[in-house]
Image (tube, rainbow, N blue to C red; front, side):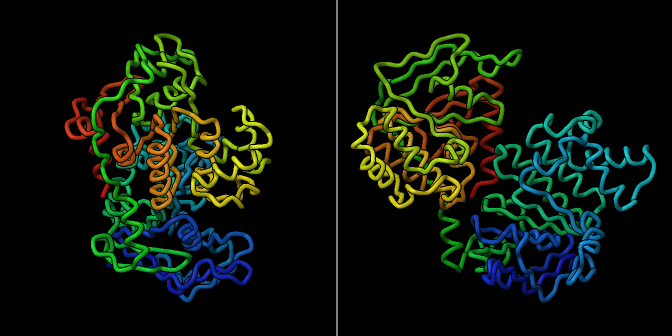
Length: 502
């Protein structure tokens, strides 16, 4: 097969220090090559270097860079503009940020065609846009072309972004974390689409920290750590017989052991009967009846918009039900751990100040708060020296641990966790899950664990609720529901999750 992309000896320096060192990659038409690794590995820097998009302050050197037959070494910005979109396209992680919020979707997709003067005339442009929307499986393409990005779901926005990247029919498509934070079924569809694009003759470079997604679509894999490629080969060889310790660690972090069934029965601490919540004309939750067993974990799964987070907010008391009842058995202290700890903390405050505020709200005397801050940080596995830092100065995993520490400051009986690990790398995610299991044992916590990741819920929960469009369509013991799902939507979720899982 003809090589559409040839990269040799890529090095990216910041202030004389190499953050990417010696990366080489060749991708042929019809092939999907994946670059995997955790945050900070250099994946995105490598991807952007392929498009001549070096960050400010970086020095980029490369021994060889050929894009669809064009030598790209030493190209200026004008030369790169002629290549981007025409010979090499980019699909970014966050389509809502990448798409122009002031442009309709159809106009956004048509822009590369106008820039590179590939199609002229309004009718021809509209026809080509519809062809592209059809190619990315966009439902009701004519209506979607007239909409703005914010009017589309996350999955549809990602399809629109892919259509825009494919508009000029580039030889190479770079997809940088294109499925991060998407629901299991949506993720599976986007991955299938990328594989179809490769099979049609495009060279696809797939950047991801998700080993399961890589396993699904990639022909070859490069594993990056600290800016260097530590292992490469066919997907089968690398993922089934890894040679490097780091690759083995990445794989181990994705293989969750199913949670063993708890012995005996547990009395409920919360009973919900026909709970409902509306936002205007939108029914977010309808007739939800369930119970939360004491000392156990209740998983809540479903796609975006299914009502999971609204249900969690009602359990915590942030939202009041419009109908039905939520009844706690006895006095309970309930705390919420948010999906995005960076947004949950005051960015101006140090971690210590945030924890002291939580302790003060819980009635802890001022003289005891300093010692309790140190104890809480130690309990969640953080060095006490981090107390002096602001949230932005912590890694994603450290911020999530700090958020858990703040929730524990109130000495809760119940923790409600809303997508607590969805944005974390596999090994960091596994460490946070282990922390939560330990805290549950030691503190005898009851947990409500909200997630779109069925693998994680299977490893954490004793019982599960499956939600679709505000309705609980199935519930029961995790082992029973996952082994023999009764509802078609549950089966669809499990099939999508299983198809992208190890």
